[in-house]
Length: 484
Image 1 (tube, rainbow, N blue to C red):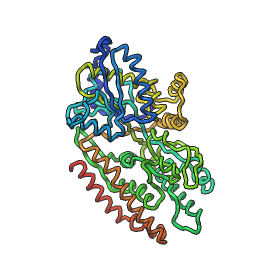
Image 2: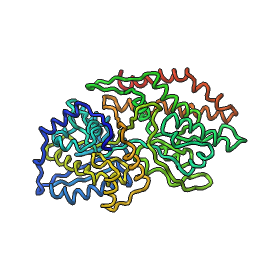
Image 3: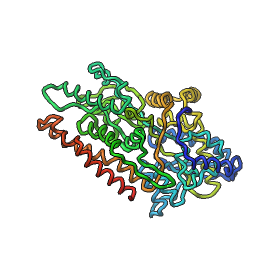
Image 4: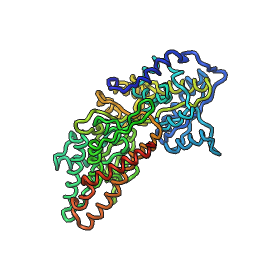
């Protein structure tokens, strides 16, 4: 990943300069004879939580013991549960726990907490040399303070990949000539999905209109943000804290045409909570999702008449034809609650240790998260850590990480800057089109059961007039969400 082009804001460069001047360096207020206790809230569960807890225990027994830091970590459940717990703490809700010293946070939530002055300035505890160890765009994402100083410490990141049911893909590809090369573009995915729908429909010549969906995607908001970026438009343009919404009709038509239309026609699908669930039930062959979803890609397809084992393929996420090579940068970092120098300093010491290449890769081997330092982002370093620590790594997670390491050269990782009401705006991107597509698909499916052809059933939904209606409603909803 060392060759990835990175988006770095001037403010974050200022933060690095500030850090080099004011950073605590090797000084510090710690006393092993009087250790400081830190509490961390996160949203890790299952194997991710177990891997994190192992590293916390290792820190406590080594560096923590040496420096006088003791860390206790607690899972708050889901991301939304964690966000609720943090907001309750800040607002002094009856029964709420005190704010933790450290908590996992996405940029939008961290921005809200920063606005009430509850986050520590991490630039005071990191010098320029230390900051330069991290992928530049990860540091840039965390510089959410008005003065450009760092508030979110990058600890684990992810991007998107495509995963495919190889076992069922192969007979389809042999029969139709479909190629993995076609799946490199979003338009190619749509064409392949139509081909798959028609091919599966033909398997039951006595029943028309019962073709199956080929593809789905998690995080429709990412489709909007990154898709528009690939087409040369920054949908959320933030300068000096001020937001400009960019919603040009031509580019949004391409997004509508390549998501809503195939959804309504049944070429794409979304049925369970996540698209990996839909692969497991045999309702989809492929999906785009986070690198962390690799561990959830099923080993078997569960059907009404039994289950069967499947293999998988991992590829990079498709890009709009002719578009720039942008990929989403996502994953929560960790923030430090504003308190006193001793607690803040100790918190940063733990986060620096956790993000050292070997420790961060050990976590990534289990979680599917990408490491955050430049040193750690290579297959060679990954293999070295696996060998030295004799780690058992799930093949899917390993293949996912190495696919990204090998293919991300020349790709620009992107995440929009934080802004007021950013969470509300993202919800519009996530649900406005997806919910309408699901509702309209249900009507089309009912019409197919009544004997109408797919063309007849979907005609009114995929027309230019239908797009114009959606476009006006979408722009209104987005403007309302950001308070315009």
